[in-house]
Length: 315
Length: 248
Image (tube, rainbow over all chains, first blue to last red; front, side):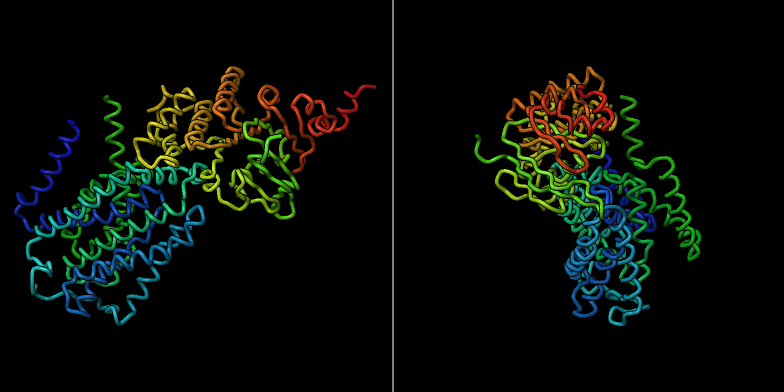
């Protein structure tokens, strides 16, 4: 009860904060935190709860981003109309990656995700139909509200927060259900899970499909906000690694871990980018590397675990 | 004679390349029996056991459980059909609590969370683990883990329970407690196949013992008779020992 109250207060403060900031840069950062939290929470379904680490989720993110702007380019519809297409393409890709590799134990899945993501990035950056090296553009000026093109970052913040809320609610329901227990069993030991009648392949695939679908939605939202997409910004390996790091930093396999991770990493990243300009991208790699080292060395369970551990100690 | 056996394995073979770990082994178990599988190290009993559990696919032979052919079925299908098992080296879900571990098993027949929890609590009660319900499984010792595996397997509501050295590595007191536990499981109407090294366990629990050596079944019968069988003594102790112990 008191925990629920604390959670409510935290959510209220988080939702009101961007309004009070009144600074466009900070509001933009807040919107990006929400967006990163969506994709990292989506990654968390397969990488955290099911323990199947994907390092190629950019392929789903890119499918969503490209579908949005491609649908706009071909039909002149609002970019967000491309989101269902992106989700459908992602589900198809998830089956292509998951069906053969989930039959094997070990790291085959991780390797397959990297391979497919890099392959598609290279194909896309050479394919004229999807803009090749130039990329795709959204509408230059908003034609209607449906274009979801706003000058202020605030509407994006609330749009992303709403999508995140839906995703976290579904995740919470999943976590408490048979599926949550089964994914935990798969993560802990497939052989034991099978012996208890857990249809391992089916549940891994289900988790991957859910994960891929929401990652694609995050990609579409990104394209709608930025109005531009190219192979590097939507399909680059940094996009995949960012999801892994955000989830692991906050706590993979926990409900709020990815949100916490995003709230720490994104402001850090945007600040270094603002301070160092274009040269900042190099710094991003260094920051990612440092975080991987710190998590691996000191807290494999992420920051949320630290919090729980403290609480248990005190109690 | 009872009608159909609950489990019937015939002509089971399992080859790893040229090596035949199990060769033409057969076993029929009637509902309500306790059967012990014994044999020296490397005799193929664990491999045979894994074939029965669906963890390994036999390269020859046929396994029929409750009238259904399960020879090629994967392990999860075996569990659904009503065959549960424990592992030689316990594999509990470390980060989950004891109760949550058992709930994973209970979810096989209960789709709702509250029903699964209620079922899991019953199983904890039956195996004497209620006190440890909220303990992290990873912090249990060996006897606790073995008990937890049995509770988890029972939660799947099996007709046949396969115990793979469930009593190995326990102290004599713990062994006595575990024997009591196995008896209470049997009293629930569950058929048992136990692989065991400790002869005392087989003698006090099993109605029938099946002896493996070099991948084959070399003897079968009441445990007392089986341990006196010259072929069994030879398999365990070697030829010279038999000569020394044989009457003049």
